[in-house]
Length: 79
Image (cartoon, rainbow, N blue to C red):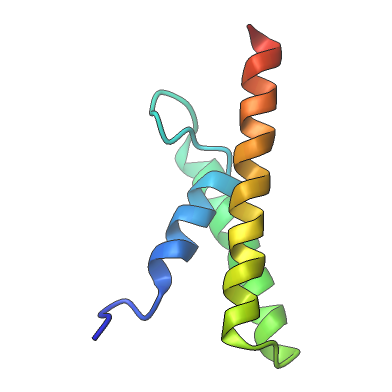
């Protein structure tokens, strides 16, 4: 059984949405906390709207993909 109940994708999403670079060297705990609050609000809203678990994973995964894309574009512009 999964000890964390699927929280692993939420943790990764929180970090990425907060703007933390997975390669390291960029970001702050404040940004990670902002990402965690944003993901928690989104998850809570979807739970209150009775969105199925599968759809919730897709939405959070989409946020991870979007955050990664935005980070890569911003990093490419900085070069």
